[in-house]
Image: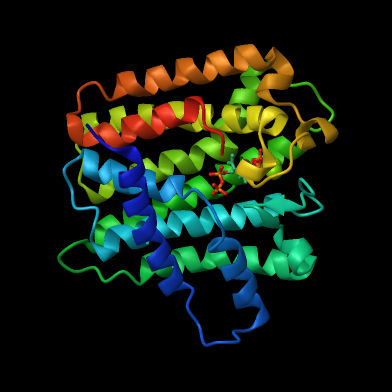
Length: 298
Ligand code: IPE
Ligand code: IPE
Ligand code: MG
Ligand code: MG
């Protein structure tokens, strides 16, 4: 039986050590570096980088190489940038993130914008600096860079964030809402799994199944985020509650109610597990992460 907490703890430790290395600098580092470290090294769950490593494990690849962990960290750098910008006054205007003051509150707005820009850029620098030797060929690296840039870009996460902002005060159909979630959150979940699949040289059938898994949990994760915005405990989520309603966001629970939203999360997790049915016990971490989404408290 897989002990998920040990698995997550080990992978998270490896990711955190690499993030520290990527973001290391001389003592008394400059303000921008300090802001980047403040946000990135805070208490994030590291779900996206762990998913990437778990996909590699599911495919019997080696998730312990520096190259794999660097790819995973690039995902976390992109994600952290997206959170900093998502919290800005012009976006969700949030004060609390990862249990601490948001970047623009702890520093200032200009620093937060620049810290986000810098983390996004650093993600691609980190990928480009992976030495294309034995562990990872140049063509694989290029494919990963393409995958991450598409997911983070204007046809992916940015498109979703645009829709999210435009939806304030508007009631969206369930269809439009799902399309928005698949972009703003789903795209990076899919890229996390895809990057792992590319690294572990998945065949077309394996990639397809893993992508189905990622699509389902990406949507489930955003719906559960919206449920936590209503009934979560800020001491556990590290974020304020009630802010979606305050800003009249169209969310899954606001459209169909909390109970139906919770049912939808369960259904999506079930679909994710079905997609993994052809995989052996090496995909248990992916299964455990999917189940965690059902009643996560953070
Ligand atoms: C929060 O993501 C933003 C969403 C896309 C829902 P996480 O819940 O993964 O945030 P951290 O990384 O643990 O802080
Ligand atoms: C976050 O969506 C999506 C991105 C950061 C791309 P939300 O705005 O719903 O996430 P939280 O609740 O602030 O973490
Ligand atoms: Mg938002
Ligand atoms: Mg937000």
